[in-house]
Image 1: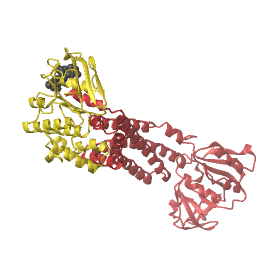
Image 2: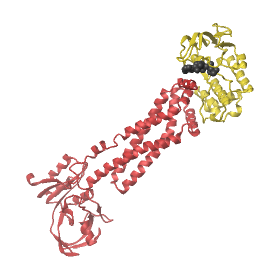
Image 3: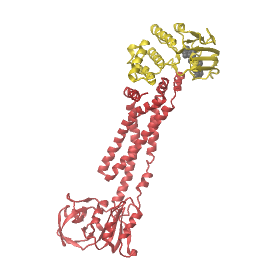
Image 4: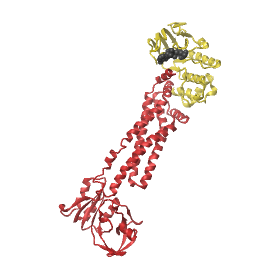
Length: 364
Length: 213
Ligand SMILES: Nc1ncnc2c1ncn2[C@@H]1O[C@H](COP(=O)(O)OP(=O)(O)OP(=O)(O)O)[C@@H](O)[C@H]1O
Ligand SMILES: [Mg+2]
């Protein structure tokens, strides 16, 4: 049979309602889309836990060694994943702010890279014209003084521009950056600690922090910035062991069941076509075309039902990087369902026989 | 080589029935119309399915010489509910290599032959029982069978339609096809070149010889 004729025959079945594309597309979208949505939702939970772990500072380590850290060495560690950011910090001179002359505030001197580490572990606010120069204030202090990023702030050490404000929630993280002011400083010289942000967690990458050590290793102490959520969060393992880890397999089986059921309903029609001398290969090709007639719209509806809410959730709640991963989780479930349906269609048609018409003769 | 069907010493019974027929022998060659007659329940449809090769006889055997394609028309016609009459007849033509357009033109001719020219765009589910059966007959004819097995083609038809069918079957036999018909209709019986009476298990003419009609 010529391809054009084949396609025309398939099209006639589609538009006449013989292939039941509307019904099958809806059932496919409901069942397979439902599985995909549930799996996406469960995966979102894993991603949220990972995101919380990361943004709470649990994936950030500090090597503390008073005056035993090289600022330049520490800054130089950052850049190649999984070691995303690093920076050195040391105690600065206590200072007073013009607005609160009675209160002595602890200040910290930090390297420029340290400021770049902050967004990985805290929500930050910078002026529209972002500059990493200028001092950084913790949100509690800035809020008390009514200071906005870009404002000038008068201190006992002189006036400075506020280069940024960072939140430092009391979520179990080390408290030292609360109610304080960070003053970017020349990285030359000795610092008290070197912070590294490593994600996904990796012991070898974390231990690179020792390269910044100039003092005696015995006096250095490596610790997690926030230990509340545990020492480890293996997002990969959490995905592997998630409740819905077999969703794609289930979709494959249910998609196959749907494809087989669709062909089962047309068993006599298939037998009758073979009886009308249609070659088995043409029959398979025609039914694959008709199956695509409901798998494509069904798959698109299912995908829309997964991706649109996922994208919305991502925009409102989750870290940007994850929308692709979520969509991939949903899409792979839908693809598995479609593959199952196509496979079952091919197998069902391949197994159909002219002889099945005899069942009709017997059951009359 | 000429196509031919030869049945020798056929006997059949189902597990739950007595012998339907025993020691039944006959043959048929191109150009013949064989009528299977006998009262309801005597085994006419059963014999057709044995000839088609779908049922193994309890005893005896069926030899088929040079038969590529067997056409069947059932007592209860089965079609695709939402496809048109002409689509049904066009399918075997398409399967044999015609384009969509050619097949549809030719299918319309087949429908005209069976007196169904006005019904070409009717959906299968809208056809009456008799129309559906004539349609499936037209479809079977369009599949160019070497052997055509027809079960009660005129049972549901009025006199005029039945005559049309009988005429077509006669014409068909004059081409290349061997036609075997199970029937109660005396006129169909008249059109046959050979009668196999299952009730008496004795072919009326040309027993076991074949070829001459
Ligand atoms: N699969 C079966 N199993 C058991 N008995 C069967 C089966 N098929 C048919 N029979 C019985 O065999 C007998 C012959 O059936 P068959 O359909 O061949 O009769 P027929 O001559 O075609 O009748 P009619 O003229 O009414 O169509 C009937 O009594 C029927 O009940
Ligand atoms: Mg019968």
